[in-house]
Length: 278
Image 1: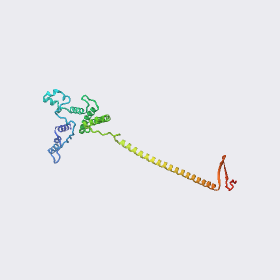
Image 2: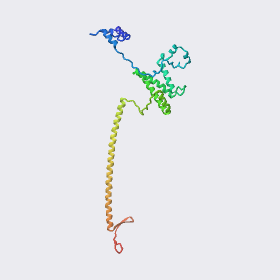
Image 3: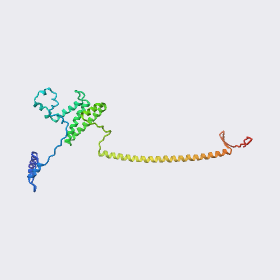
Image 4: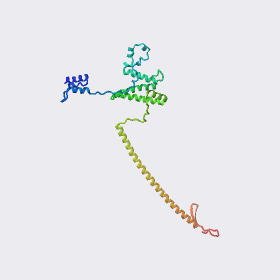
């Protein structure tokens, strides 16, 4: 059993379709046909994505050697060994980062300003994006990329608040499209969605109870107003009757006089002699 497995592993690494010599012949199909089918199986081609390092020429020197005067006197072999043609990805990324920093730095000695930090983070973020396009399940680098994006957002927000002209220049030079962050952001989860639905339902029920309470209060106020109006109308009716009686008494010559706290009723009659008759 171990020998058969070892054969299969060796044949698989030696050539594509290495399983063919050890497969049994199926009825109506020979071993040669199986081998041809295995050779003809198409392998998945990796999709090529644009990289930020594409604009770097292969004849450029590495970052540590490009400013040396002695490089002009070296032969082509040494120059080729120290160029980007023989450089690693890390060295190319280092040169690309220095190019982005030179676009936004305040002076040649500026290595730690807000603009320089944004340029360095931009090179890192783009490198992570290129890596994740090929390796989609690399969660560690994805986490590092999200951390770098959050850090760059904070720096851009600070630069926009303090020096807006410099902020616009940095976004233009580095090709950054700044979008305003939302006022409130929260990752949607199943627990959060259920909690929100429950809160909305409770709010609606509370609104219904409050509306019913307001209707009761309005009905009570309306009923009280009606009772007050009824009492006022009754008082007005009593006052009108009293006034009618008073007017009729005045017409018959009766008047009310108040003297030392007592009501004295006297009947007056006007006679031609001008004397009051009791």
